[in-house]
View 1 (cartoon, rainbow over the protein chains, first blue to last red):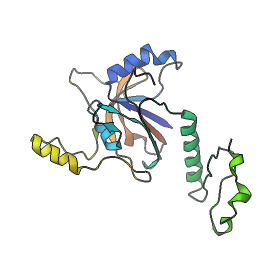
View 2: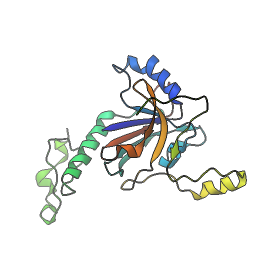
View 3: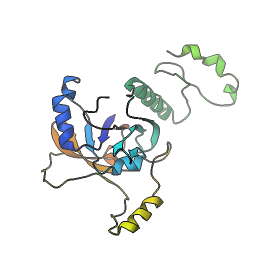
View 4: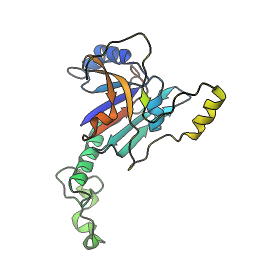
Amino acid sequence: MEVISVSVDSHFVHKMWNDHELVKMVDGGIPFHMAADQAGNVGRAFGVWDESQGIELRGRFIIDPDGVVQGMEVLTPPVGRKMAETIRQVKAFQTVRASKGAEATPAGWEPGQPTLKPGPHLVGKVWEVWNPKMEK
Amino acid sequence: MADQPQGCARVTSSVSGTPEPVQNIEQASIEKKEVSMGVKVGQKAPDFTAPAYYKGAFTTVKLSDFLGKWVLVCFYPGDFTFV
């Protein structure tokens, strides 16, 4: 999986932030591409550009190998994301894709747990294979 | 992605299929209203190219270079902004 972070800061500022602060949080520094979007063009295209503040909202997009957006989440600035939930969603989308759409993952599903195989046999029978208590 | 020479001109990002900037300001504001922005799940992500910092080097990152892989694109308000 590739990660691209995007903000309105220049790539020069990204370097300074990485070298002076982030490297103290992450061994070896940031391992992914830190993109500069000073004019807000990319943020505008993704719908996360905030005109009044001149910044980009905390948007996160899961894009599949065909370039299709499978998931998105947008938060206002003061609240940070939870990476574990993003990874869970990516694993769920990968599982669905590997099944060529034959399987689906129920709410709260984690890798290793049973998936759902939608079809006539499953109508009204989901309770037999999944319930909220199975959520970890 | 090779390290690229850095000029003093301000390089910026671009989105594929974006029309050239319109010189006439009045015309530009009209154009802006007509362009629908934002993405929807189940639809193609807009392709983009942007200058980037990656593992000690200044590079250019292009979303479509990663076709065939899962990609996370994460926006945030700004460097050094706490969260």
